[in-house]
Length: 199
Length: 94
Length: 221
Image (tube, rainbow over all chains, first blue to last red):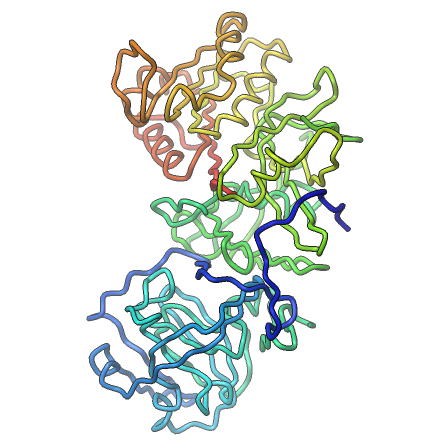
C-alpha cells in the first residue's frame, strides 16, 4: 500500500449522497478518448442495425433527424470515478430504432466510427433506457464528446455510451467489446460497482 | 490537461514503462513490437499512447491500429496484446 | 532532490512515476524525468518539476512538500529513451521546454563519465526567464570540452539576440545540429507537437530514423 502523502488533497472531490459507490461529483465534462477523434461529415454519417441473421436497417443523417426525438435529463457515471448529475440530452430512443427490427437476440455489440466497440444486453437498450443522442446541453454534440451522435445509456458506466456510434449488431451470445476484452466488466453497473472483470 | 498533437495522441510508449515494469522482469518499452494490422515494427516506446481513458491505449504510429492495452485495477493489471503479433525483447548484456 | 533508500541507479533519460495518496485513499500518479546523473556525489536523485497552476500534482510537489516528507516512487523506468556512455557516436539533444530535463541528465552523465563524445544541445524555450539550468549550462559550455548549446526562443529573445523569436525549424537544426554524415544519436524530448516537428525535420535532413529517439511530454498536471 502507498504511504499517505502529507498535505496532499488532490483535486477537490465532492462525495454527495446519491452517487454510486466510489464516485466523485464533477461539474465539467471530462473528455476521455482511446484514439484519434473521428470527424464525420453529416453526409457520410449512417447508423445501421444488423440482426443476428444479417438483416440490416439503416438511417442516414436526414432520415435519423426525422425520427421522433426525446429530451432527457440523466446522471452519468464514468468508470474513472467521476459522475455528472442532471446532464441534458436530445436523442432518439433505441425503442424507436429497434421497433421494426425482427430479432430474438439477447445481446448486442455497439459499433463506432474509429473502430470502438462495447457490448450491451438487448434488454438494457429497451424500455426507455437508451438513446442515440445528438445534442448535449442544447447544442450539437461536439466531436470530442462523440458527435455527431453517441449512444447514451446512463444506467451503465459511461464507457458503454459509445461515442461516434454508427451501428448495433444483434447477437445471440454475449461477447466482449473494446474495454471489456481488456479487463473491464461485461455489464458495468455503477450501483454494484462493476468496474473490472470479477467485480 | 494534455495538448494533443496532430496525431491526437498525448504521449508515447515511454509513458507505459512504469506499468509494464510491474508485469515484466525486463523493460518492455525497449522491446520491438510487430503490429498485427500492418506488420510495422519498432520500439514499444514509439507507440502513440492515449492515457485519458479507462486504460492506456497504445496504437501503431504507422496504421493507428491498437497494439496493446493496459488496464489497472486496484489489485490487478490487465495487458491485452492482441494487436501485436510479436514482441522482441533485448536481453541485457548480450 | 530526493534521498532514495536502495536506489538501484539509473541511466540518463529514465523517469520515475511519483504516486501520491490522500488521506481518503484517493491516488494520483505522474511521471517525471530524472534530471541528475548516477552515481550522484550525495546519493540523491533530482527531479525537475514544472509547476502548472491548475495542476493536481505539480503544485503539491513544488509548494507543499517540505524537506523530510516521504514520497512514493516507482522506478527508474524506461529503457529506450536512454543514453549509455559506451555509445561512441556524437549526440544531438533537442529539448523543448521542460523536455530538456532528461537531456540534462545525459549532459551530466557525460561529464561524470569523463567521456569524449561530442554533444550538441538545441534547447527551445519561450523566453530567457523560462530557461532551466541556465547557470549550469553556461558553466558547462565553458568547462565540458565538446559540449555546445544553442538556444531557440519562441516568444521573447534576450536583448541583442541576433534573430527574432521563432519556433524550431530546418535552419536551426541544419546549422546547430550534426550533419547526418556524422551519424549522431539524436534524442528529442518535449511537448508532442514539438517532438513531431523536430523529428520530422531530422528525417527530412537525412538522419537515420533508427538513430532518432523521442519522448513526448504530456504536460501532465
